[in-house]
Length: 293
Image 1 (tube, one colour):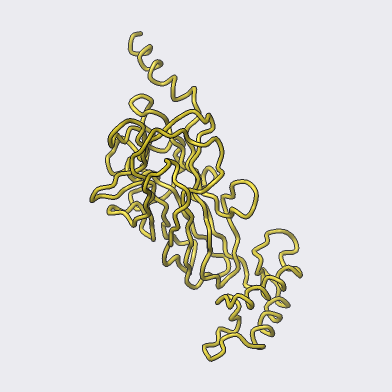
Image 2: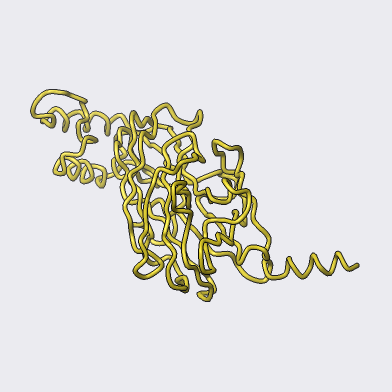
């Protein structure tokens, strides 16, 4: 009986309060949080994926994120290669956004210990004054550009978020709420089976207490095992998913790519100078006429 009461005492705070959210938005240009994005074949760079951190209660505070000091582990965003694609993600380039803690230094690193077999980056903020987390995903803490090679129709690439501190330590977590480097939260409150280099979602939640609060790392829909980049046929320049998939918007999209000298516009994959010529327009017209599967 005493054991049951003790268990209830420890479990109640976790059940009563929703977790802090660390969320990956695959397409910030579209309202809401997007778990996937469709891109045309031959895309070489997908820009501006955004990571937000917020508290639905708007009442909990943090002092820092991650471990800085020779180990440099924090909130990891990475790619786990699979048999779902013939092309590859070759690199991730991170860009710092707005730190949650005023005047705190924040960093993007490659991390020492890898959570994913593919490219990966870690986000860290140094300790500072207690700061209440925002109630909604307003400003990203960092954004990411994804670099691809040979992105082919039908390819599916996955990206996932991971509390690398919790994985490394086996306890604690990426967030510090007390003075010093306490790392007193941890794990993924809702494990989704995300595949990593260390096994499926090796990031179980720490109970509250000892954790100060639970954290939910949200990347893909339940069962997906990560957010997805889906590659459509080449002529579907705007990456639309409706019916029909090809429209006048794809022509305008292609013209924009040409104006930007985007590698995608090199439809005939020529290597001469200039790279983009009238042949590319004819090539795109032929691809459009061929339709998408």
